[in-house]
Length: 295
Image (cartoon, rainbow, N blue to C red; front, side, top):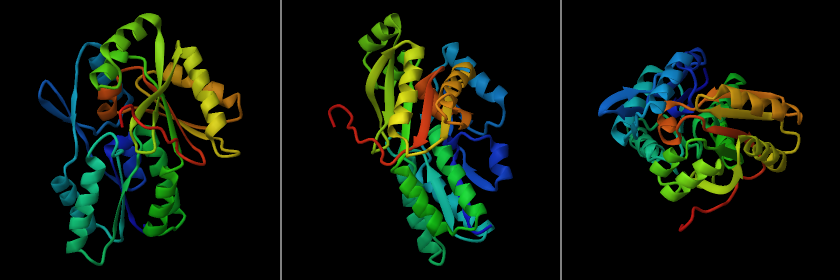
């Protein structure tokens, strides 16, 4: 192993997969009725149980990984493993986790000046973060250094596209992404907001479609428009809706996009998106530049 590779658990990979690939992870937490839970999910049943709880009315709260606990985590990794460290964090536009990781990295490197920690803001979430992690895993397996891998991942961050369709509008309203009126009328009229993660790693509503079928077509057209020339690789994230995710996969395959990975949206991000949310991630030439309203 040429370097240490790590992520917070918002990469939404099965934890057995991370162990198999020798990737360490910092578990993120969420709270239900003030009881803390950690994202150590490693089975289909755990994801389904979480979303079943949301459908029954549970409203989880989430928390960020603070700088102190992240520094402890980094120091432990350096003490127990050889090499420099590359760490991927949930988007700074969604959480302070990335900022805290970068603060922790600077503090720990003062104690270990001979070691390097590359704490990367993924400007991504869930399967977008896993896309970047999988790329880092592949580069490490091919013998790249921590520095070269970190540089390539940072460049990929600026090319990555996330297009998202939400089904449960009241979860978006709770997070302040849309108004209460929009949530009510959108639900009644079957309107689906189209959301992207912008150049700052923030969620931004950029359009809307009526019904899921038209929304899926919008996602496919977006990939065909914004992907790198010849790009056939895509990641699909879903909040316990494998049927719709598979429908999107089939639509992409009909357009020649045949290297497709499906994965769950985990509990930390899923607490805010609600059940049924669907996301499409792919690499383009440049990330979309679009500001949040009022920014």
